[in-house]
Image (cartoon, rainbow, N blue to C red; front, side, top):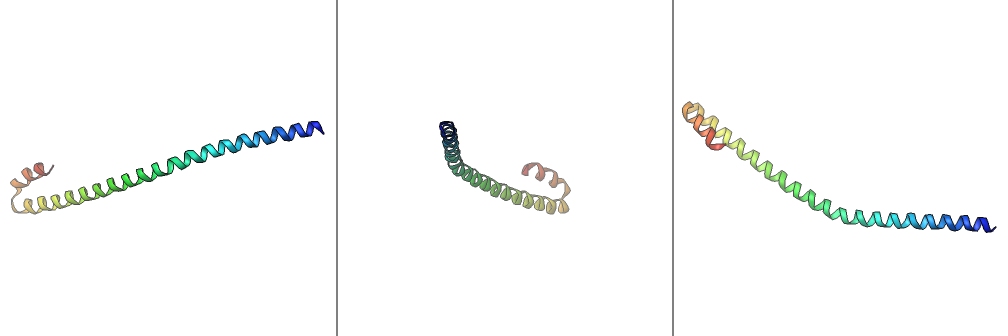
Length: 83
């Protein structure tokens, strides 16, 4: 009987330790979630900036294309100006 009680006591201490580890892990996750959320918002902003830049580049290329059909010499200089 005494042996069983000591085994149960040991098992309870192991469970207690595991619960404290889980509690710590949950607190770390709780800290990480807002950080991840912030990082995602930054990435979202960066993607919108990239999207805007791509649309500007697309517009610039269309202008260069239009210029090149009218005057091929100006096209070369315009292209380097936009870059």
